[in-house]
Amino acid sequence: MDAERPASSASSTVVGPVSRPDEPERVNLHVLKLVEYMPAAVLLLEADQSILYSNRAAKLLAQVLSPVQGGAPRIHVQDWHPQLVPPDALELCRLRGTWSGNVTLDLPHRSSRVLQVKINALGERGGAPYGLSLRDVTLEHCRQLELNLRNSELEVALARLSNVQEAVLKTEKLASIGQLAAGVAHEINNPMAYVKSNLNALRHDIFQLLSETRARLDGQPLSEDEGIDIEEVASEIRDLIAESCEGVDRVVKIVRDLKDFSHVDRIDNWVLADLHAGLESTLNIVRNELKYKAHIVKTFGELPLIECLSSELNQVFMNILMNAGQALDNYGVITVTTERYGDKVRVSIGDDGKGIPEDVLPRIFDPFYTTKIVGEGTGLGLAISYGIVAKHHGTIEVTSVPGQGTLFLIELPIEQPRSRGMES
Image (tube, rainbow, N blue to C red; front, top):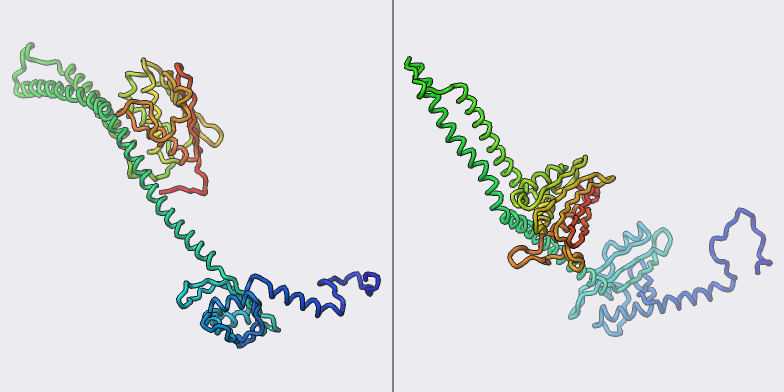
């Protein structure tokens, strides 16, 4: 056949398959058979929506949509169902050449059906005839509705879970504060005790100084036994005031650190924070719990401000420091080390205590898992710490050798991923 084909110029292109002159009728017959047995309902319409042709699937669909007519002829699409072709569909098809959409059909004594309708203008200039294809997507539509419903339920459940998680975090933080309350009270009581003592001494010295001053103003100098050395008293007053101010500053610092640590109303306030300030604040809070158990060795490197929830990170530091103190049977050493590592910062907290058994190590971050006796721990501290670090897109790892000690290594990004953004 190729040899008999007329030669063509080099610039000509073959637009479609080449058929013999006697083949179009045969091709049309096979195309019609193909359309007849297609699973989708296919119709051919005139401009007045009268039906020129419908395949087998369309005839079956007609029985579903309008069974009351039985075998009566269905000349127009409206005979199938008045809502099958929306009023503006053909007009839009004339303008655009095609139209498609989902149509919901209400059926008497049956559940409604959802059809996917596609219309194509087959005539010249967007005119008749029109090809109409229908596909029943009721099942897909119901599944989508069910999926949307399930998604809504999951969103509600997630919101509730988030609220519960936040409540658990606050409860655990307040429980930790409760455990430290006695120690914090002791830390406050000590400076307040000597401030009170200094005020009593100051009152005595000022009374003597005023008596001496009054006597001199009245021209009645006191005897050597009754007189005072004004310079000595003035120096003592200065010392008492300085010591009292130092004690008050100490109390103010403890209260400020306690407030910063337990500030639950700023739990979602992402800020640029100084990790060293957070560590110092936390160490100040747990000072009374640790000072009789361990010597704290701090090795702080140069760290930039990092994007974080500072209050939550303080909770992590406190949980690990408290665990380190509880791991010491005798007076030991707790190390706190910080360093920058590329675009991350590292915080290492270690102790030379009894360590963690190998079979226990994989479970220490599990919620409610604890090796402490009943009443000494909830088993939530490390689980919450793990969640907080994960929330910061960081990692927390632990290595331990029984009898030698434990080391927690926390890595945190300096900047949070931009997809999350800063929350306020």
